[in-house]
Length: 433
Image 1 (cartoon, rainbow, N blue to C red):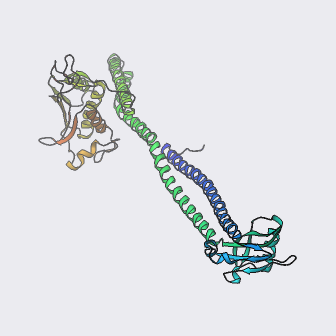
Image 2 (cartoon, rainbow, N blue to C red):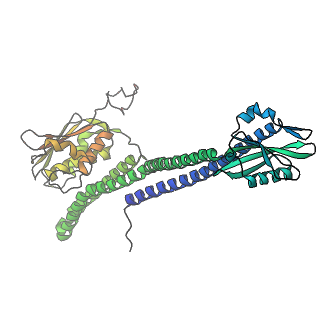
Image 3 (cartoon, helix red, strand yellow):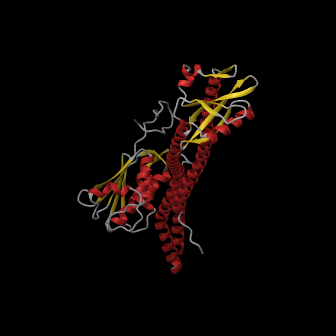
């Protein structure tokens, strides 16, 4: 049977899978956009280069003319288009004959060779309009535009304007490099953002798992003692028939206590999950503590001294908090007597055991933290603190006078009758400011 990984581990793996999927999707989209951008840029640069040499060649072809069979080139010496041209030439060919260079302000090596001139001339004669030809000139690729010059009804010459495409290609290559670097950076950033967002989206699930685990630990902590007591009572009644009626009554009481424990556990779980709001009602704190002491097994050594006091709270949750304080004192008091005192909204549970060092007292209220030498789950005092916080109260551990440890649960007292927290009248549900 295949053993499944723990739920948190599966969630962490799902987070990384989500991050990788997010990164892959982002990379694919950016790759498509980068390819489109590179292709559009290449076409745009090529079109700009072609249009530039074509416009220049057409403009210069209008300044060159034939008169009585003679080609006049004087206007080229003062024409701005000719002076700013990167590569310029005028070719002419007798009929029939091969084209020859009539005008070239730059070096001859900057112009096509004879084979290149023949090819350009043939295309001009065939198209009878401005043509574009790319040739290898001086080891560089040059884009040429050749515009025809008419001599009556035939093409007698052509103006050649060339532009080196290396600069355009270099700019295009720089764009591609920037696209690659930018896409890589965006993928990294998107992956980090995706990992962060997936982590945030999974926090509620992880928090829910942690709450579920904590609830199970707290349920085990709360139910362990009454279940063990119930077992002893039932076994005692079954062994001794004379004790059966008393054992039955005691078992019924323990079952009632278990029912209240389960109710309190469910209330706490729903409150922590945010699906339930605690309804605080006025109650007698002294009677609640006395009932908690009465439910303890006989011969536990717990005594109580109470004064009548009314607080506003949830009876099930407060009862759990009080029971946990008493059980903690019984468990860690070294078998010494435990005394519970109730006065002015304060529940003080004292034992005469070895106590707890001052540096460790605050830490014991954290979940899953136990005292020195303890084998417990560390949930009892954490529940007490949670209930106190829920009711606007406080908890603390202090050294008891004469030795031992005393745990205190302090709850706020309600406002006097007739003055509630909203300034109205009736049953008080708030506390005095």
